[in-house]
Amino acid sequence: MIMSTFIKITSDKLNIQECYDFVADPSCGGIAVFVGTVRNATQNKEVTQLDFSTYKPMAIKEMQKIADAALEKFGVKKIAIHHAEGLLTIGDIPVIITVSSPHRKAAFEACQYAIDALKETVPIWKKEFFEDGEVWVNAHP
Image (cartoon, rainbow, N blue to C red; front, side, top):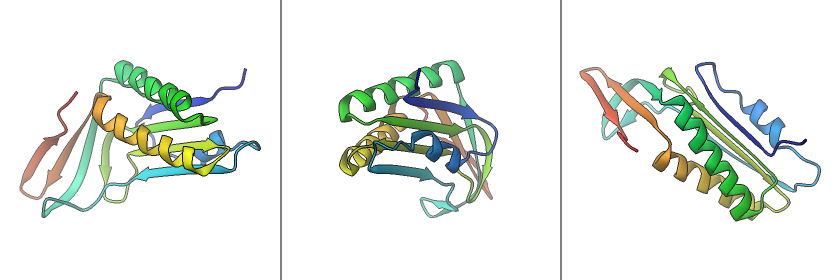
C-alpha cells in the first residue's frame, strides 16, 4: 500500500529532503514546500531560543486529520507534516510541510491550509526566550 501522508513529531533535526522525497511523485507537476524557521526577534524583542512542547498523541492525531483533510479538500497526491519538539535556536527549523499535486495551485493551497490549521488546532506550545525572560506563545488549543 502506498502511503499518502507522512506525519512526524521529533526532537531530532527536521530534514527537508526527507519530506520532499516522500511527496515526490511522477504524476505530480508541482511540489509546494513550507519551512518555518526560528527568527531572532518578535514584537521588537530579541529572541534567544524557542522551546516547543507537545501533547504528542493528540498532536499526531490532529496533524493526521489536517493531512487527510488537505488530501480530500484540494485533491493533492501526498503530504508530509513534520514538527520539532524541544529547544531550538535561531535559524533552526520547527516545522516542514511538503505537498505534491498534479497542478501547482492545489499544492500551494493545501500547503497554506495545513500550516494555518496546524497553528490553530494542534496541541503544540511554544515558549519564547529573551535576554530578560520568557513567555508562552499560542497557549491553545
